[in-house]
Image (tube, rainbow, N blue to C red; front, side, top):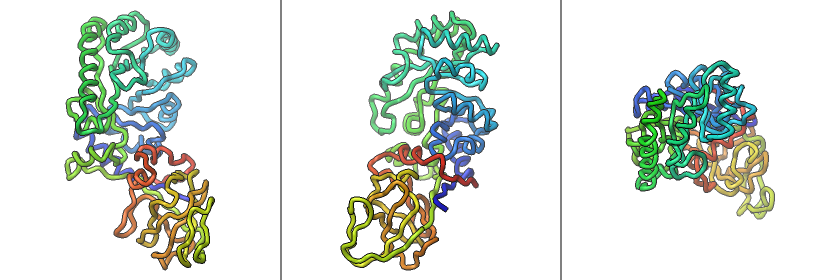
Length: 375
């Protein structure tokens, strides 16, 4: 066994139900982009689609993969769709994000006519993140323009928040105010065209910390997988208020055990020298397998219920650990990289702290090629 990711579908369903309960049964969408944040998109979607109002992806190829995998739930593509993929998007019956009033919307209209169906779109407003979206003041004119396009239904108006993970976030309230003002100015025009779009701006952190941002729909990503958007959200929502369960664990086996003498180096660059004669273990995994190179000489794994520090540089496909406190370790011993073994646990957040990054970065980098087992 090189490495195996174990995904608990029970934990995924538990989290989906808890988040659904938080916002109401008709208001929870789940984000499965990025291979379901490393958890495996098809199996994750199959596990929770019955609890989802919508499933959100980033790209049209993700939407197509879901349909090919048997997913029938409504799908919203949040990212840009190349014009030459619009026929595929229509065939997948996917809803699309829209922030263009010129060429793309006309291409979309033509794709809808070819498919003999109406394109369902969610119009995106830029309220301050400054990535994608119409400026708030441009929404009324855009609604007028969209209303003149054949085959187009505005089924949603949405935006995305920049700093909702913070307990004190005036900018979140400013973004919400901009969003509401834009919608209120456009609402008479929408109604005149027969459009009754849902409004959504909240992802996991906002839905937890800022109930006023929940509106008609909340898009849950990181929380679905039992992880917290930030330490602040965990502090505010934990203690039984929202009992999330991490869904992923990561195991491997020792492939070699050796004893090295005092002063001997370990790994590339000789960044670790043995302070004494000591046993070390070799793992058959490295940064190509999702272990951040930043964990070199940092952090630990669990072997035989004991912590074994990572030593030396993490290489592309191998890593080293100090076995000084694991006398029973041998080739074939189970190694827990993420998860629990005995009294100890190593979490995705531990990896993120050691690598000076965020938990999103850790799990979405787990390679598609790693075996995933679902139970």
